[in-house]
Every structure is written in C-alpha cells, then in structure tokens.
Length: 255
Length: 328
Image (cartoon, rainbow over all chains, first blue to last red; front, side, top):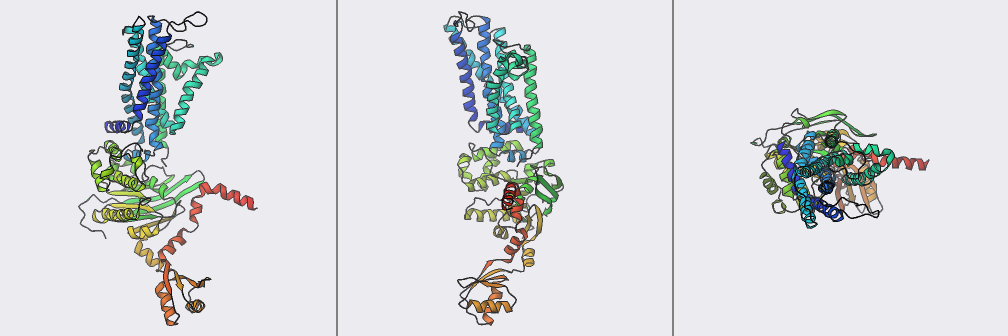
C-alpha cells in the first residue's frame, strides 16, 4: 500500500494541476479574510453592522473560518486525481499494475488525504497572515489562542476531508468535467437554495455545507448540528463517497 | 524457430476457454477459446469489430466476462501475485499528456515495486531515451506506441499481450517492431500474443494465428498449416492481347476466368504458375501475370466475410433498422 500511495504522489507531482489549485485555494482564503476584515463593523443600510467589528470573538471566528471556503479547490484536486485516470485512459495501465482495484482507490484516498494536510496548513497560514496584518492595522490583531486555534483546526479538517470526498466523487462519476461542474452547482446553487427556503431549511444541517458551518462558523446560518456532530457527518460523507467509489471502480468494466 | 537456448524468463502459457461477453444486446465475444504457447508469436487476427480488444481486455481482467476463463499458467490475471512481472500489456496509448514519458514509467515502477531506474532502461530498449523527459502529449503516434511498449516491458515479463501495436508506426517502425517481437519470443522464449486486422502483417510476424470473426473463433493454427489449407490458390490477374482465347483456354482447364473491357482477365482460385502454364501450353501471348491476393488472403476474407458489419452492430444496428424501415 505504501508503494501505491507513493505512486499516487508521483502522479500528483509530475503534472502541474496541483500548483494552480493550491494557488487558487490560498488566494481564496486570503481574499475572503481581507474582504471580511475590510467590511468588519461597517454599517448596513439599517444602521446595523453587517459583519461583527474587528476585535470581537464573532469577527475572529468568521475570519478564521473563511479558510474552509478554499475546500472547493481541494475537492477539485481530489476529483481530478481520480477522474484523470479515466479522462486520459491511464486507468488501463493503473488497473493492470494493480488488478485489485479497491487498493488503487484506497491508495488514492490515503494519498490525497495526506497531500491535503500541507496544502491545508498553507491555506491556514495565508488566512492567519492576512488577518493578523490587516486586523492589526485596523487596531486589534486577534490572538492565536484556544477558540481561534480550534476554529483554524476545524477549517483545516474541512479542507482535508473535502479532498477525500473529491476522490470518492471522482470514482463515482468518472467524468471529470461532469464531476467538477456538478459539484460546483451543488455547492453554490443547490445548497444555498435549500438553506434559504424556510420549508426545506431543516434539511440543510444534514448536508455537507451544513456540516461545514456547524464545525467552523454558524454566522447567519439556519439551524445546525453541534460541532462534533458536524465532524462526524462530514467524515461520514467522505467515507460514503470513498466506499461507493471503490465498489463501483471494482465492478465496472474498463473499456 | 524457438531457439531452445533460452536463459530468459520462465515459460508461461495462456489458456482462454469459453469466453463470452455481451454489451447490452450486442454479443461481442462468443464462446471463444484458444491457447498461446511460449517461445512463439501468436497473431490474434480478425477484422475491426471482431471482438479482439474486448477479448484481450477480458484476458487481462479489465472487462469481466459473462462466462469463461482466461489464465496464465492456470492463474487468472486478477489473481497473479506479481502481474507486472508476469504479463506486459500494450492496449492503447494511454498517457497523461502533461507528464513526461519517463515520469509515466516511474509512476508504474513505484506502483509495482520496481526500482525507478528501470524506467530509463526500457526507454533505451524501445529507442525513446532522448525523448523520455519530454511531455508525452507532444509525442508522435509512433513514439506513443513505443512508450506503451516500454510500459509493458517494465516488469521484464515472460508474457506480452499487444493490441494493434503497429497502428501509427511508420514502415521503419513496423519493421523494427516485427523484429523486436520475434526476438522477444524466439530468442528470449517469451509468450507473445499480438492482435491485428492486417493479415499481411501477421504473415510476416506471427508463427501461429488465431482468427476471429464476429466474436467467434474461426480458425487457429500455424501460418504454414493455414497456407496449405488454402492451397496457395488466390486471385490472379492476367493481361493478354488474346484475352477471349485465354478465357476459353482457362475454362477448358476448369478455371473460372472473366475479362473486363481493357483486356484484363481475372482468374479465381488459381496461382500465377498454373495460369502461366496453361497459357504457354495453348501458346497464348501474355503481357502481364500477377497474383492479386494469395490463397491465405482469400481464406481470411472468406472466413471473416460479412462479419465485420455484424460485429460492429452496436452503432450500426439502429441505422440498419431505419434503412430497412424506409425501404418497406
């Protein structure tokens, strides 16, 4: 299994896809951190602050949680990691080398979970640096203590789990463009609709997006699970995607 | 000829028995069985759509057959302990275009637990040493075939399975491949199974052929056996200023000859020697005498005639139906 995981890392690092996705993730985390810090405490039309002011615990929770938004890039990294085998037809030599295909999918899940750790740390570092500098300039740099560290840890966990979910989705759908477009539509169209329509809002807390918000920041969210329940739910989604993906990869013909 | 002095890999025999696969309503392969012996090149011959690729993918465990088995010395591919060190396969030119040929090989070295230095050895062996560090996306078709072959050789396997490896090779590359495969089989004692839809190519490469049509076994045996079965008789083209008299002379000898407008006479089921002898005996002047096809070619066409459309029925099927419907 170690050999297969190393083979997956070689695959990942011998093309340049990962560079673009890591840069995208850093830009997104840093950008949101800057945006939310810039708008912190600004008054909306009604005179109420749209976002909590710099220096409040609520502000700090939001601004460290935004690192989790970059999870979409790790999701795509995982999707590409799996679907490139089908897109470029390298599934054939891959499954010839390892006829027990479940081991290939398992190795990919492990390889991408492990590769996502340094990426997540980098994304968190960008978020923290932007926040410390910008909020510091606005008068109150947050301290990296208990609550804030927990928020950062939660965001990092979300980033890693999404890479695993991506591999699972890729194994399920096989079509790269379809898997990526489908995931984006789900994350940015379907989930927001569900979370904003009163009648079906109750379902949102059971969705991946709801789990992410339960873990990181419940700002402006409908009813959510407890943070630990969110962790379990999100890991459950990763596990289900991985299991289904493995089962299908084993059963389907490679033509 | 097997050299007998093989210090090479252990001999491994491929046995295929009762393979059947249906895709939807199309029966791609039907109760197909044959064996492939070590130390020889076996040609897997059939028209496009005869089920060759499907069969090879079933042999390699990529497609699950409905029924039947394919084994390497009794072990199915999926149960081989070291698949890469037992069987090398060239199925299609499948590379990530952004990855270099060398990196492509190193990925599979890692996965199979082979030292990565082996990548450079096989690149050298297939003549790709200088192109190894370039992106595979920029390779010519011939270079891709060579890289696919290099991938198959990574584990130094006693068995090689190749699906249409000559596709995209230039004449020089085809000559090289022919020599390479014969060397691997005859001098190194490996088992080589190579598919093709071109009989002429297989006549020059293979010792034995397995002919399939419409997913069924049509004939298997050595090239020599098939040739003698076909008695060397094929289609002969003759040109003569006395074409009508030639047709009559050949008719009395029991040969079916037809003449076209420009004096060209086509003789079925004959050899140039036979036609020449008859013409000489009757003192008919000839200006040209040549074989249009050999007996083996005729046999191949006859054996697989009409089966191409049938086998390719999945896309063509509905179209045929519509045509029939329109004709009614």
